[in-house]
Structure formats: C-alpha cells, structure tokens
Length: 250
View 1 (cartoon, rainbow, N blue to C red):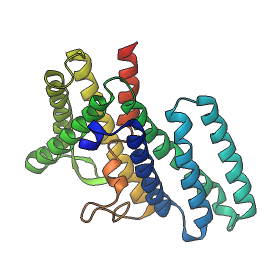
View 2: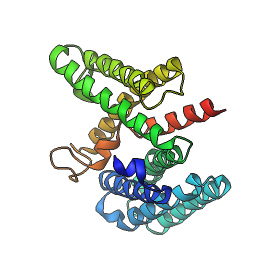
View 3: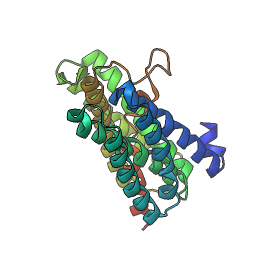
View 4: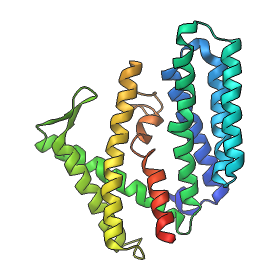
C-alpha cells in the first residue's frame, strides 16, 4: 500500500511490469504445453515489452509492435509447428495473453499516472476488496441459489448481490474520505459497474482454469493460488476505471 502511495512512477511501472511478467508466466504454463518453451519465453518478453509504448502513450509504436509480434509468432509457429492440428488453437491462446493480461495491466500504470492517480488505484482496490469480502460473507450465511455452477460451483446469487452492495458501499465511503472531488452519483455508478466487472473477471478466470484442467493458476501464494488468481477481479476493473476517470476529467 505504501508503495502505491509514495513510489515514483518509474518504480510503480517497474512493479507493474513484474506483475505482468509473472501473470503471463502462469497463464502460459496453463495454456501451452512444455514443448512450447521458446514460444512462451518469447511471448512473455514481447508481452511485457508492449506495455511500454502503451503506458507512455506512443500508440502507433504499440500498434506496430503488436502487428510485428503477430508476424513474428506466425513465422515461429511456421518453423516450429509440431502437431499441425493444434497450431491454430495454441497460437490463439498465446496471443490472447496479450489481450487478457498485458493491455489491462498497462491501464493500471496509466491510471497511476493520471492526476490523483494513487487515489484512483486505491479506489479500484477498495471497490474490489469490499466486493470480495461482502460476497464471501453474504454467500456463506445466506447463499442458497447457485450463480453459475458449471464454472464456479461455490458462488451464489446472494453472494454476488452482496458483492455489488459492497462495491457501492466502498464507492460511497471513498467519496466521503479520499475522493471528495468526484460526484457522489457518478462514483456510486462506478462502484456498481466495477462490482459487476470484478465478478465477471473472477468467473472468467475460473472458466479458463476449468478449460485448462487446473485448480489454481500457480502456487506463488500458499493456500491462495497464483498471482493470476489474485488479479482476476482486477484485470477488467483497471481499464474501466481509467476510462471513467478520463471522461470525468474531460
């Protein structure tokens, strides 16, 4: 928390790149087989590298780098195709890592670089944390109706509703404490939308893990899985909040 508040932007950006690198590592470990080590390492380096032009708003460089990355992996798979019937699926999974991890986490750094950026980052964490806590306790004590059993059998509709209430409560508290310059109703709306997006992000990562046949994305945090398991609710929330803050400024 202190690092978010006091670190210079370059330090925060370095931390963001490290988080992205580990998240990509976990994702590719789930998505691609051990025979794709060259492809995994290349994708990890290029995926993190693409964050720099995006964060520093060199968008033409980012688009060019992304285009070259697609061409690079097309050639790499052409030379190292292995089982031909799996090439299309593996290539799609590899490139999806850029969309699912690299671009959303670049928005975390973009959010931090805005006016009041530390407070916007804290707001996202506060909204998602209170969503998770309220969803857990509401689901534990009152959860009866399953939300989406084929993807996440332990989640309930009651828990999901409790999570949304928690996010909106967090937004109201943020307005009264560290974000008083924002309008109350717009911030309350953001809390509701971030709550929905956070829960969808959690479900989507569960869907990915089930499709890959794993319980957790990694073992970095004993008893809590990998870093991607901690980021699942945040990945979609960072871009959403960034563009909300951008609209609020305009």
